[in-house]
Image 1 (tube, rainbow, N blue to C red):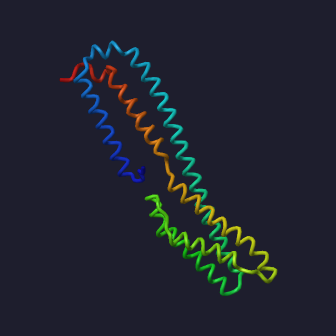
Image 2: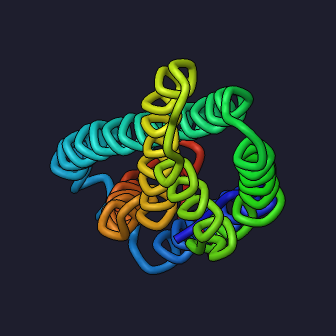
Length: 211
């Protein structure tokens, strides 16, 4: 389930508010206020319990979502940093390996930014970006260093290339997972139950029975 736009959020809030008010009006038509007043003591106690539990649940879900967002941000930054490191380290390789590695780095960055970033919104990934990442890692590993400078740079390039792949895999897996469906179901069920309990309290803004 996705809700990644301000417009969609506003629509959901407005519709849920209208549905809540409509439910209240229907309840006031069907249930006599005297019966509501008679059940205030029990209804108020249950509402406080349900409301407290839902507030705790909502807070935990928000914290969980923020933690996942922070992890995804950190992983993306690490992936970008490793890609930049490979691009810079490629300057120490001889031609044509140098140009080949730099070209793959640029191509992968463009594919992730221009193509894969959009497809991740639909829980998909870019096959071209994946192939480019694999090819980049293979090209780095396949290089055989000869000079002392190349031997010093080679393990760093291999490590960063492997980190690109690992961070990419973590990023795409997190995009596929998102917030579990059970959390959405629990949130909506808790909101419904909390609002439903308020229908059976005689609030002062409704002093008389609606006709």
